[in-house]
Every structure is written in C-alpha cells, then in structure tokens.
Length: 478
Image (cartoon, rainbow, N blue to C red; front, side):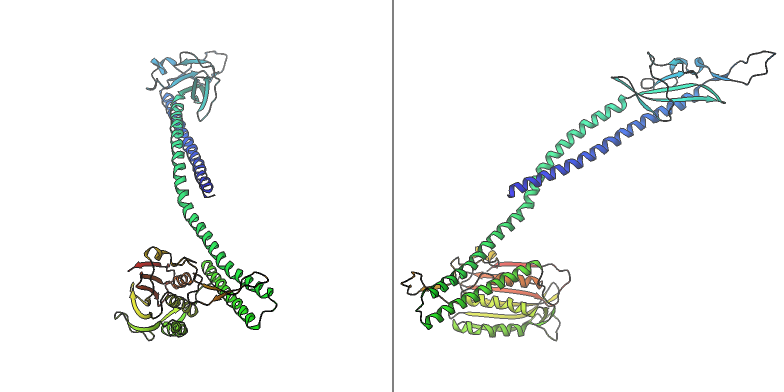
C-alpha cells in the first residue's frame, strides 16, 4: 500500500514538474523567437532609412506646349546615382533589396533571380516562403516626395537568422527538460519516501495501538462473559459463591471503565479537545494530597512513602507562594498520581519511594521540579525510550494473577477468580503523565538503572509562555 502511494507521489511530482517545465520552455522559446524577429525587423527598418536618405531625386522635364497651361513639377529617382555598384548598405551578404516603379514594375534588384512575390506595403515585416527551402523576412516601403510616389523599396532578410537559433534552442530545451524530468523523477521518489516514512510509522503505531487496545478490552470482556456463564450454569450456587462472582464482575467492570476513560482522555488530548485550565495551583498541597491517597497502597507493601518540600534556587526572587504555578489542578494530580503509583508498583516490599519538590531557574524563568524516586527493579536501557508509549510494559508478561477453583461438573466451564494485584495496570499511566506534562509546557526526564531504581524528574514552568513549543520527553540512563 505504501509503495503504491509512494509511486503515485513520485509520478505526480514528475508530471507536475514536467508540465511546469514545458510551460516555462514554451514561454522562453516564444520570447527568444519574438526577440530574434524584432531584431531582424529593426535591421530592415534601418536599411530602409539608410536607402531613403541615399536616394537621388531629380525633377522630371515638363512638356513644352504653348497651347497647354504649365503643368506642375514632378520628381523621379535617379537609379544609376542612387544604387551605384549595389553598395548602398554594407550588409549585402544578408540583405537583399529591390526597387519597383510606382506601377509595380521591378527596376532594380540585388537578387540574381527576381522574386515572384506581390508587393505588400506594411509597416512591420512579414515572413515570405519563396520556396520550401527558401524563406525571407521582408519589409516594403512606399517612397513619396512632394506628393509624388517615386516607387517602392523592398528589403529582404534571410529567415535562417531566426530559424537556426530557434531550432538549436528547441534541441537544447528538449535535452534539458528530459534530463530535468529524470532528475525530478529520482528526487520525487526519494522525497516521497521521506514523506511516506512518518505516515508509515504512524500507521504501524496505530496498528500496534489498536491491537493492544483490543487485547486490553477483550480480556476483561471475556472474563466477564465466562464468570456470568459460570454463574448462570450453576442454579445451586450458594449466596457466598454468587457474591464472589459478582465481585469479580464488579472488579473487571471497574478496570474496563478505567481503561476506556484513559483511552478517551488520550484521544481527546491528542485532538486538542481537552485544554488544561490556567489557574493558580499550589503544587505542594497537591503532592501532599497525592501522598495521602497513596499511603494505604504503600503500607500494604510496607513501602516507605516520603514527601520532601525542599528549598529552591537562591537566584530565584522570593515569591509569596513559591510552589504555586499556573495549571490544571486535576490534570496535575493525575500526573503525579500516575508517577507515584508507578513507583509503588515496581518497588518490592520494604522499599522506598521519595518525592521531592523544589523551585529552580531554567532559561532565566522560574520553574518547579518534582523528583519521584523509587528503589525498585529499574528499567533496562533498551526499554527507556519506549516507557511512555501507550500499552508498553517493560515486562511482557501480563501483570495479573489468576487462580482456578473447582470446575462445574455439569457444564465443564471453569470458574476463574481474579485476585487483585497492586501491579495491575493498562500501560497507559506513563503515557497520560507525558501528555499532561507536555500540555503544561513542561519536560519529563527518566534516570534509571537496573536493580537500583528509577527517578522521574518533572519540570514545569510557573508561568505559561504564549506560543511556546512543547519541550518533549528526555531519557537519561544513569
């Protein structure tokens, strides 16, 4: 599919470029041809002016008749004096001249053979095809003096002065356009590959995302269906067993609802439907609430959960509320809840999760930095660039436990009881954290080492900059 699209893009690049080149070449050819014709016409006009100034005009002798009244004076051209030695103009090798009487009779010519072309008096030149291999550009001028038509002067210029350069130009343009089309075709293939590459990556990512989402949705639905079938197939099930089955359905339904809500949040965040509000948000109070909410989960695993409201950068001016920033309280609470719960999830019993809040200066602007450090299993170096991908888990095994109980003797359908596990998750927590951080124009960093724990460092500006770009995510391996 992508190769076909790439071929189409390259073909369209080539076709559009070829059309543009043909339009340019046609315009350039017509411009050059018109310029050459204009130069030839200027030469013809110049020759006519020179000949007109060199004509020797003499009065004709009147007829003496005493019985007739005196006739007006008339004039004529002295051909011998005007066109001696056929050297009126110094361009005899290119210019041919003909002199006609007022009645149109050829009286003098530089041509070896007279042209059988009628006289056309035109202000501009015209192209005359004498023979298939002999074409001239001609200009005919009527010469008058004191009201008398002395004759007609016709000058001719060989057409090869226009035909030869334009023919060579056509060959050069054709060769240049052909080479350019080949080059554009190759460049179009290369550029279309560059254009298709991010689309192909996005398509592959979408396919993977769809497959993962389908898997995450299908599993709880299948378990719900199995649990309900087991309950329906055993009419003698005790109330205690029925309650257990309903508890399983309730847990699966809640997990399914959380997954759908996470997917909807990410979809709306990507489309820009959810924009974080800009209001004063005390980050210290927010982190205290997050720690308070996560304390029971930490106590269940005997993990020490500690919050440190540290100092700040001495270069930052003292503020009335040093840990307050402009942001969305609910989204930021979700961001740090996901990070803290992720630390608890991957920290073994007896471990420790530390949260530290401090003010720093970055790019000359006040920022707040939150460190979430755990003593868990850590993240392999190869997995660090992927931890913010949706549905990505470092451990490919599904983090859920199951134990089987006695099967129904009548139906043969096993009753599956899903044991609640603190490690259960959908793989969307860190993706949501990253999206919220970027929506607040912040940055999130990862420092991790296997068997030594992981540190998430979140840096948020205390004031939003209009038109600022999202800094993105940075991965650092300790």
